[in-house]
Amino acid sequence: MNYKIEGGTVLTFAEGRPVTEDKTIYVKDGNITFTPFSEGEMYETVHAARKLIMPGLINMHTHVYMTLMRNYADDVPFQEWLFNGVMPVEDKLPVEAAYWTTQLGIMEMFLTGTTCYVDMHMYHRQSPSAARDAGMRAYIGRGLVGEDLYTDGYSRFSQALEEKAEFESDTLKFILSPHAIYSCSPRLLSQVSEEADKHQMLRQTHLSESVTELTDCLKNHGKTPVELLRDTGFLNDRTILAHCVQMQGDDLDIIKASGASIVTNVASNAKLGNGIAPVAAMQEKGINVCVGTDGTASNNTLNMFREMGLLSLMHKAAARDCLSIPSDSIVKAATYNASLALHNPSIGRIEEGAAADLIFVDLDAPSLYPNNNIISSLCYSANGSEVDSTMVNGKFVMRKRELLTIDKEKVYFEVNKIAEKYL
Image 1 (tube, rainbow, N blue to C red):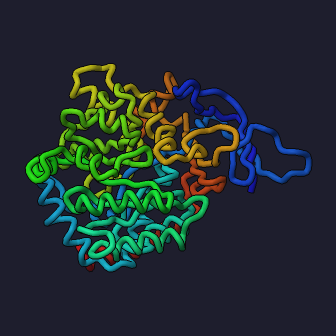
Image 2: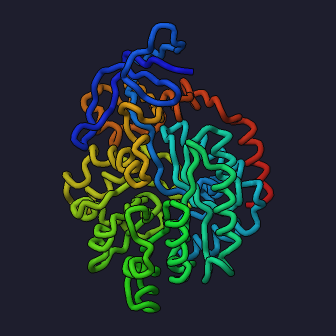
């Protein structure tokens, strides 16, 4: 179906800043155009009065399958959360269960305006299957661990390549995803870098998330985690680094020189007591900074509007500077910057030829009214419930708050069974 979207307010970018204007958008064959349809072309007219049409939000780091563990291991130290809370559940969860827990996460993302996510998952084929069936856009990586990619790490690596061969499409892409420096050897990180270049894949990892990770790396390697990644050849402009909370010395300069992008996860970092990443310093260095929620075991939501608000407010408080991390930079980080990190100029923006990944935000929602400053309201007022409709690749996946591609009751039924048996 093609669409003429008229009467709405459209968020675009001018000289790198988000701006709004009243204009008509045409969606043809899944892409955006501003050229009217020719006589005889079939389309549906969407009346979007009092709606903000903006690029769908891009969740640049998460583990969607973790919805099962939402509010499961709360208010405990990071090491206990990971090794005594999360990992025991992951070890006993059957592979097929992750399909339903991922669908649950996609439901939440559609309802709160996310049209693309970057995943690091544990269960073969489940994340891409769930995203494909729901019509979600995703960049998906099987988490990799081990000493050597071709021996103890090969099973997971082969699964990553199998998923790419089976599922890759216009909306599903695949990314090599070594878990972290403490679960992957320097040799494996170097091997992943070579394989990423060979297969023309992006690469992602968790980095400098906790003080323990930093101190252990200094003790064991005599260098920071950032320096370790640099020395393995892992850092380049196709690298995505999640967290980057514990930055030391020249770390930010190294990341800037490499061209890598950083994904900040403010709620997860705060909840686990890991601190606040130096995002203002990252932006001042000119590093491409994006936004992610992390998984629901540590956030506990996949709601990017909540993440955007926390990102600005927490940094202002920590810096005691009301000008720190302004709202327009966060809207850009959650959309446009993500497209740069993913090397995909067809998402994260509304412009000629871009993919029609759009959300329709209700400007008459009480939380946004009156519309004194639409851009800042997306950070300081919106909570996600204002999203009226969500479109991915030119297809409505949620319209007037009704999910169109996911059977909500079926998902709840299956997730309840899983929770009763394995939690």
